[in-house]
Image (cartoon, rainbow, N blue to C red; front, side):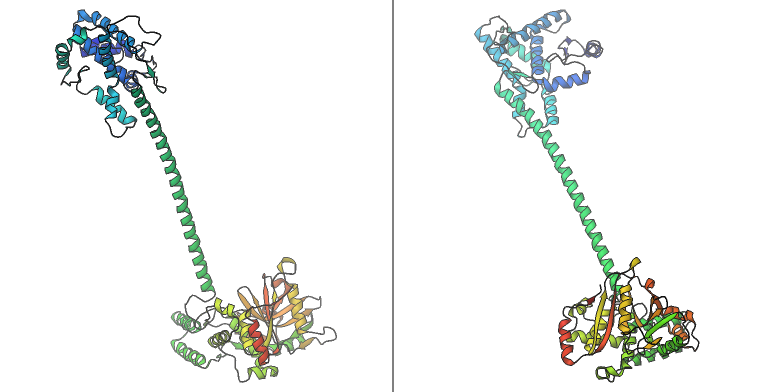
Length: 579
């Protein structure tokens, strides 16, 4: 005999069961026999019964086996079986719900009542015993597996617990060992019913209900735990992603800082790529390889360079002399648009060579300034016996000034080393070197523009006042006793050798640029200087638009005591600011 899991009806064969399921439950509406759930398909209903009503379903099956043993399985006894099943179910409900409104009024013997109470309790606690045997309470998936395991395991006797191999052996066992129990009628029992507050399952034992509810709570807790784990996992992942992003950002910033620092090192000659000597030799080799210099010329110039470096005096290969005198003649005889012009003392022009191209402008401007001081008798006391030094010698002289204690902050920024490097120098290093030679000078800082479009009219006015104390009643060309001015701005430096005042009252500086080659400067030595040749010297207010300018102005000589005072003052470097 086969029993339908949904409605409990029994059939004789598997084809009859398939037909029953198709006609009654597949084509018609499927309704749960325990809680009247409807609107689902057959598979969903089976799953619902096995999970939500597995205790009641197991109880129904046990009584079906009892009915089958007592009344047989032939077709002509089907009605009796169904009727008996209804009576047994009615008796069980009566025995388990004496206080229920629908309790039956029938009365059964006390012995029968106790026996059927045992049957009811045993069947209702069957799943609870199975679950208690596990050390850890399972999740929903394990519960479903346990239900299937309990329902499809070998049959167990509902009265004594004996397990048989198959249902036929179990029927024989029940008929022979428990026939007296099957013949005993059922009666009402006085046990209360306990409803599950979560799924509506009715239990007769409080402890079973407690175990059942605990399973619900653990399942909910497991679900919440999984959600919490998922949330925690998401937060941890987000935190890891943020940390990785921050790490990459810091790494990129560090890389950029290092790259910028290396660029600055290359720009200012602090990348340990060699100094004047190495660059001179390397560039001469390039000229030879390109066919612009004969090998014999290379060796001759190399020997001259080595001799110049050994004695520390510039070889004069880049010097142009006599330009101030040529300018005096030009302004006397031409330049009709110029109202008045002031010129510094005699100055030699020095331009950059292959050895210092790209970084030697500060050294070349110092050579120009020193060449003027060496030709001025007022500075013989502090510069006696000196010649214009070569660039490596100038580097050595600045290092000596640092060792004396001048400008410790500037020395630290350049690692206290200039020789063998292509390090740039500026107004501070020129001031330090001149002061160490007892030449009195000061720095004037034009730290911001004072005119429209970023111009510096205050700079031009200050230079005019430097070269001339009397503007009226002077001749057109004034050869002053003032040394040239060292003019520094971002990335470059030049030397101011004079200033023009045009007839329209505008001012124009006369500037020597170390970036201008000697062949261009020598054009100014001609007897008839063309006005176009002065374009490289003339700089109007509109031509100087850098953000900041610094001027080093020489004022005379220092006594040994004044030199010591200035050395102490250079520990905190200050400059005159205009405006």
